[in-house]
Length: 234
Ligand SMILES: C[S@@+](CC[C@H](N)C(=O)[O-])C[C@H]1O[C@@H](n2cnc3c(N)ncnc32)[C@H](O)[C@@H]1O
Image 1 (cartoon, rainbow, N blue to C red):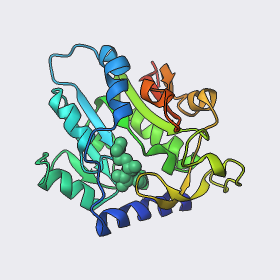
Image 2 (tube, rainbow, N blue to C red):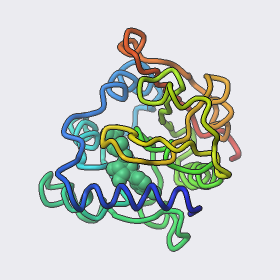
Image 3 (tube, helix red, strand yellow):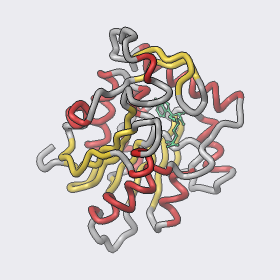
Image 4 (tube, rainbow, N blue to C red):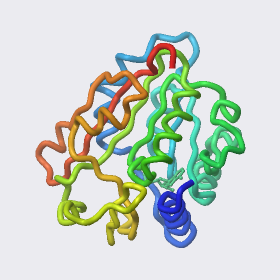
């Protein structure tokens, strides 16, 4: 991991160690995108579809997918977050792992096999440019042919980030935000300009849609959602 990503990961680990922070409810944008875009893209399989909830926090999104009949796997950098998933949510300890997937120790595929769906909700903006492309490659390598990928990013048209638009990015492509995100942490965050940048960022996948969700059209915070498919031959 590059220094900026490492710092963000450490800060998140510390939040779970020292506070009761955790996602209690599924992320609204993800639920909406699932029903409008993802559901119809998943091939009807005899087996329950297998989903990875990357950066799973306390497992609220994992629980959402479980309730839909998915076989759910989760990863988070925080041991406390993953312990919560196993001990409080009762999820299978074989399917949830606290780890740094960029450490190169074991690939996602070696850990969990291959997926029909990979979800990276509210987390990829904490990765430096280089680390994000490595991570996307890792996701891609763990996806079945035609599998679906989902991620979201924020734009400068967002109440938390708007006033930092002119701030200098560091060498890793991150902007220092003193109170970032739901936990209000000082972190380096990767903000996207627009849909074009978003599409380019996730260009390893074949785009299905890059959208704002209906709720966000009325809010002060612009979030872009990317839904893609594992491209043939990648
Ligand atoms: C804003 S929370 C989002 C949680 C959840 N995905 C959601 O949609 O509500 C960001 C999550 O990213 C996790 N995270 C940060 N760096 C990570 C890394 N390098 N690898 C895995 N998870 C990471 C944090 O521990 C935290 O649970």
